[in-house]
Amino acid sequence: MSDGCPTIRFTVNGQLRIVQTPPMKRVLDVLREDLHLTGTKEGCGEGECGSCSVRMNGELVNSCLVPVLQAEGAIIQTVEGLAEDGALHPIQQAFLKCGGAQCGICTPGMLMASAQLLSVHPHPTVAEIREGLAGNLCRCTGFIRIFESVLAAATEGRATVPEQVGDAR
Ligand code: FES
Ligand code: FES
Image (cartoon, rainbow, N blue to C red; front, side, top):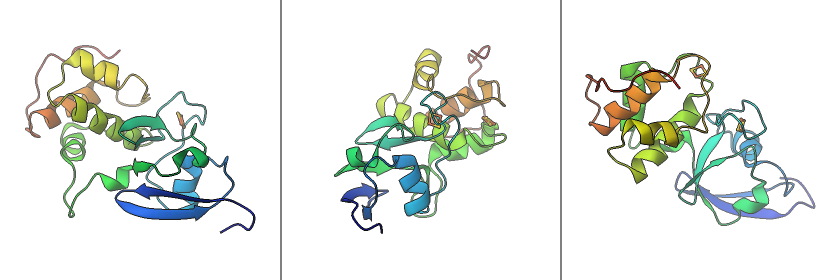
């Protein structure tokens, strides 16, 4: 803890966390450095790539853009909070099955964006998937396997995937 810094309380993955830290420190850095939750990744650091996406108060946010002061009282979910009782979340299982992850730098953010999308649209169309993941960039997969993963998760993780994904954006 840092002397002279405010104390900030919020919930991460169901646990109350209390940090004493500079108020403008990014939520991304607080998660990684203070709380040792290194699943959340930094890509651009400028709000452009979505690698740092977490769910905060039911919304998807770029944690590189949010000062921790704004997280006072917030409920945050990171990629570490997706699995339950040792079982991967359906979207994690689908990414594994469908090859939705390659180098992995975008993957935590993609998973969080996908989980957010599925919470709003449990059976999304391809257009809704494209829109829901529009803030998340991937340099490796060409997006098709990511879209297929979301469709597979929406159809309860079945290995066969609908064919209507089409071209990468
Ligand atoms: S690291 Fe936050 S949007 Fe790219
Ligand atoms: S898997 Fe490499 S950037 Fe998406």
